[in-house]
Length: 303
Ligand code: GLN
Image (cartoon, rainbow, N blue to C red):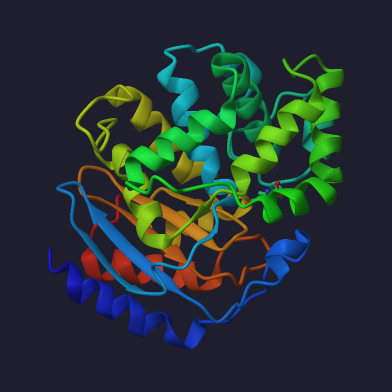
């Protein structure tokens, strides 16, 4: 695969879309991000990185952290998480409350906010410190020993997080929270606020592309666990746009409202795109164009 050529094609296709969309202003700290930035990186399973644009500018990982939290919970070889969260697309916004009430506090999947809060709550119970577990994983896989939570973003999420608080209290009322809501949400808000670059995000995703094998060659997950994560990314990773992204891109993707997107090509590479401007569903506009172009040019789509 001529990855430098693929990256070049992506950068040129994205050019007219850089700055398009709206930054996530419901989290005030994300509203101050310059939307006219774009980064793209491909990390291959043999350890090479091909990239272009603003690949070394850190941004908030947001919902992409949900993939790593789920990976850590599954690495505990404990399947009780599946009594607490289902594995179906929601068809509704990532922070919707209505479905959760109707379905008695059991979220549709681990990649919408209610499901992710349950996963973080489980990781907190399993490890004693969900953020520390995530920090250790992200540092090891990216090779950046200084990778850290942005405390300003975390504070901003905490201050404006009433919707997530409502979600967590609703789940608690149905008996689906292990820790007190405030404690679980403190970990959830901080996990969403990890500051990561595009190049680092691609590297962080590689253990999924390698079917569970980490950067140091040790195994975090069984083959089946990564197959499950990939399936959930494809069906639920871009919320109520997952069908459209399967159609347009044809790769498992997880997005975040910081404008990041992580796509996995099993056995080949992990691909990260970042453009802060979002579409109305909360997915990066430029990131979507980038991944669509990547799939088209590389012919690596799984569908
Ligand atoms: N921290 C964000 C929230 O809870 C994450 C949402 C997202 O990235 N889709 O609203």
